Each structure stands twice: as structure tokens, then as C-alpha cells.
Length: 177
Length: 245
Ligand SMILES: [Zn+2]
Image 1 (tube, helix red, strand yellow):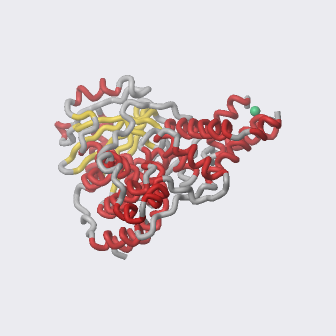
Image 2 (image 1 turned 45 degrees about the horizontal axis):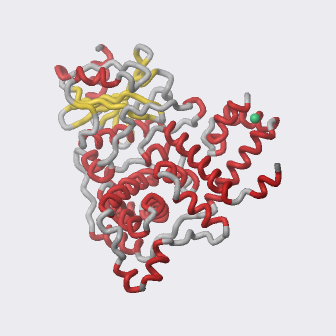
Image 3 (image 1 turned 45 degrees about the vertical axis):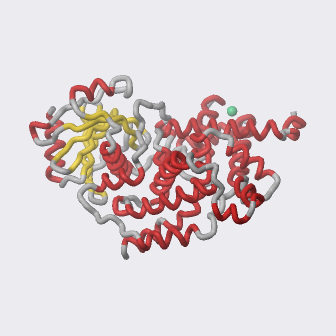
């Protein structure tokens, strides 16, 4: 099997995970798309240097770094409406800016918004654990911090999230007491 | 187990990160403690709500675009410096663990694959070296640099006279534990020696993993693990030299 076939078989199926992480890091659909495209090409060029069994943490580390680059670069054009959105009119543009989360239950938008308000380090750690289901060790690899930091970030992310969700609507909990 | 002890382990338990022994201890506590059981239930409920979001969907056309870009782009062929490519690709901005030594509840975490971790840390470190984000240069400056960053004092020896010059040092995390990492050169090859208190890492790992050789030993209460793409004979020779220092 050629390297390209191997890449297509092992790495390309991780695109949904890659995009989801990029989307949460950048909080911007166009930045996320650019970062993921950039990351996948970088990953392909670097694929010969990858020797592990599971490419997911490796790819997500590349995605995370690409997002940071995209973010720095993005400052210049963040206020420019992408061409395809401009053609579709302002309604389409504003819809894209506040893309709804995929889950339409009433609870989901509130959780989505609460996670978006978490600081960068807490947000990415939470997403890697809860959505991507990475282990602490894998999260440490992706975010390039020690495991102790992963544990404390995760703990703080959950505490903040609980606080945020409780203060909006916790009548049932108060009623219990 | 007290409630405080249980609370310290509860999230790791919830995340499936506890070893069998700690798991059993936490479960025993949960059986008899309604408050901690409620806390766990609340953690689970929160995780369920976050997981319920699912992933944000990939925009139409992105997959096709990437596939065609990949098809047009040739991978860089294997050469003698894989880390150069790694560095260029994704580690440019990374500075791993410079000084940030955290307390890790090591006994409570499951064992990762040590050899894999060593090789990963080695390759990652070489990428950092290429970007000059680690302490380099004067070997005499490296040892004091570790002071205050590690709970132990690694022995730092230069082997330049034997053809293995000491190039740089950094603090790294291998299998989640802080270690001193020293990089030595040999022609175009690099050797990373990870040093950590003995017993804080898994049992001896000698062998070969995807082109990298690993040689480990213990001395003076410290564990040494040398990783390199250098051939086995020269790495063994290097280890023997370092052991006599
Ligand atoms: Zn308790």
C-alpha cells in the first residue's frame, strides 16, 4: 500500500474530529475550514515521520497548531465577509456567524454557548475529553502540556460549565433542597 | 478512604483513568457515601449533556477538496532527519513544559505504552531543538538550568571527547512524568537521554521501535532512558560511556 493510500485510509477518516476541534478552537467556520485544510496537507507531508499506531492525537496536535497560525493570520481578514456568503446576502452571513450546534434539543444551544465562553485552554481540553474521548495522556500530547495540567483544566472546565448552566436554570435543584 | 480522597480521584474515575486498585477503592467508598455518589452522578450528567452536542458538521466540499489537494501533493520522502519535517509541520510554536512542573497523581493513572512514549518524546524534542526553543550550548549552563524545574538533580555529562557532544537539555514529560531530557549528537543522529527518579517510570524498556533504539538503565536512584535512530551498537556504547561518568 502506498503512503497516499495509507494516509487516506488512516488519517482522512479523522476529518470530522479535526474539523470539530478546529471549530471549537477558532470559534469561526472559515478559520476552522482553512486551518483543517492546512493541517491535513501538513499531516500528509509529514506522514512519513509518523510512526505511531493511532494517528488521531498526532493529527489533532497538527490541527491545533494550524488553528493558532490561522488565528494569527486571520486577524487581517476576520471582518471581511467571505465571497460565497456575500452572494447569499446578509441573512446568510449572520446565520453562518452564529452557526447553530448540530443538536437541536433545547438544552444544546445553552451548553454550546457556555462551552464557547470557556477560556481557550479549558475549552479545548473539555472537547478533547468529552467529544473526542481522548485519554489524559493523549490530551497532554495534543495540547502539549503535562498530564497534571490536563487534569486541572478538565476539572476547572467542568466546574465552570456547571456553574454557568446552573445559574441559568437550576430551579429543579433548588426545589429539591 | 475519606470523602476528600474520593473527591480527588472522582474525575479520574469518571474518565476511566484510574488503575484497578484505585477503582476498587473509589467504588467501595461510593457504596457507602451518598454525597460522593451524587457528585459522580452530577459529573456523569454533565458529560452526557456535553456529549449530546456531537461534533460540529464538516462543511460540504471540504473532504473532497482535501482529498484532491492530497492527491496533487507528494509526501516528502524519508530522509535522515525526520524531525526536521515534524518541526516544520506542526511543532513550530510548541515549547513543551519549560519550567512548568506540575504535581501528577502518578499512582492513580493507568500505564501508557512506555516505549512509544519515549520515541514520541524524542521526536517531539528534536523538533523543538530545530526551532531553538530549548536550552542549548554550554553544557555547564544546562545543569543549573534544571535547578528549580525538577524535584531531582540530573547528572549532566558532556561526552564530546568520545564523539557524543551534549547539545541541549529541556524538561519533558514521559508517560506523564517530568524528566530531564538531554540531547547528544553523533554525526547527523541525535540521542535523547531521559532522566527521572527510578520507580517513577515503568519497568526497563530496551529494544527497537520503528527504527528507534531504546536503551535504559538505573544508577544512583535515577532511571536513564536513551532513545535514538542511531544503530544499536553505537547506542549501547554510548550508554556504557555515560554510565561510567
Ligand atoms: Zn464521600
